[in-house]
Length: 180
Image (tube, rainbow, N blue to C red; front, side, top):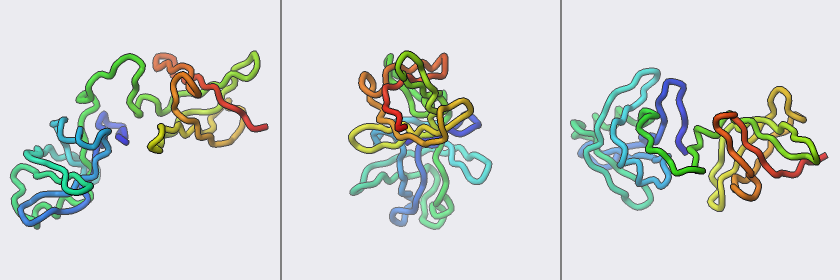
């Protein structure tokens, strides 16, 4: 799951440790699929509130995880200094998606409306999404004007539980039951 940052940067991974003695690092990729991490470029490592531009000049999957080499980092001691850094890219680096596909960051904050008889009711706003393997899930939290204070987990299944996504209006229409 890529996380959006307020400064126009997207977190696409995190350096979790070192790999070997020659400056390679272990990276937990948030991209889907994880291999896409290496396709970007323009990477920036975030430490506290500042960014450092880096280049991953090589990378591969070892076992279950991604390992990568930061250009100019050729020993384990130097690589260790990057442990815990978030790996970011500018939002503008994301490729455009086909019609009807959305990045998670685009869905966060949208109002979720449900058809209730002849009326539409506001369930809340999308706080974040969860990847379950079978399908993604919208985590909808209460907001001003919502019908109650409940948090709801709604499967993101276009054509089934999700009827329409309108980014311009900031709305997702769903077909979901409401517990009384």
